[in-house]
Length: 64
Image (cartoon, rainbow, N blue to C red):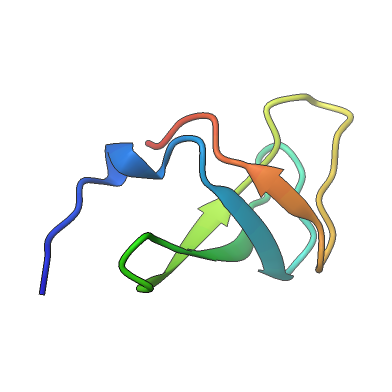
């Protein structure tokens, strides 16, 4: 197996698979890396009035 740094997740396009994301209320999303490994992350929007629903796609802008 290969270890990857979470900083390599920035720029990845993820798909929301569970929940309703708002600022302060993350939803679960997933993406596959170049090796085909699926990663699950919690995401929330950077913008106060923005929301993400199940099935929405978003680009990761930072990892904390």
